[in-house]
Every structure is written in C-alpha cells, then in structure tokens.
Image 1 (tube, one colour):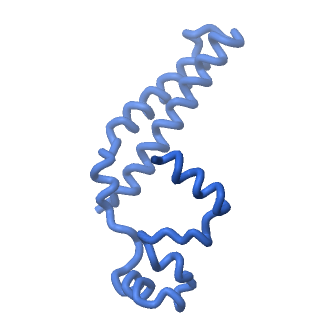
Image 2: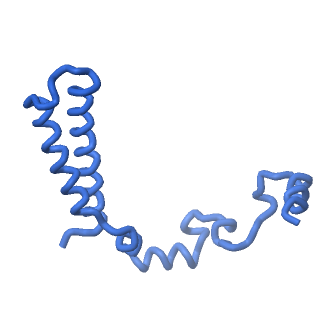
Length: 120
C-alpha cells in the first residue's frame, strides 16, 4: 500500500507542476504576447497544467490523516534515547522538557525582571 506521506508529496508535486505550466502559458500569451492564447504553445501548456492541478487536488490528504502518521523512529530507539540522555548526546536541559532554566535564557537578570513586571 502507498504511504500517506508519498500521496501527500505526489499531491504537492502535481499542484506545483500544474501551477507552473498554467502560469507559463499565461505569461507567454497574456503578459509577453509571444503567442496568442489559443495557439498550440499555450494550449499544450495550459491543458496538462490543469490536468496536473486536478490530479493534485484529487490526491490531497487531509491534515488530520497526515498528522496521525507515526514517526520513522522505532519504539526501541525512542525508549533508549529517553532513558539515557547522556548516551544519545542530549544534555540535561533537553531531558527536562517543562522546566525553565534561567541560565540558558538570553535575557539578563534585569531584563528578566522587567519582563516579569510587564506580565503583571
């Protein structure tokens, strides 16, 4: 079965390719006037472009379905990196997700106090 990510990538590819083809047909016929809008040069760019756009919309993936795809990491790798941050290269600041470290802040003590005063 084709993955959700591949379908989303194919949809984006067809939408962008179609937009470029239709844009090139309009640019060559309307903007620069190199050929009439009904000439084969314009039609042979616009028709495949419209087909690509239609195909891209047909393959579109809802964001909720795309966001539900699990990451590429396997369960063993994820648990190893979470249990031992030193071996995975993560420092102590990365292992603490919800704590604020004032030493890592780019603000000085005075600026941090001003920021707190602004919040109140």
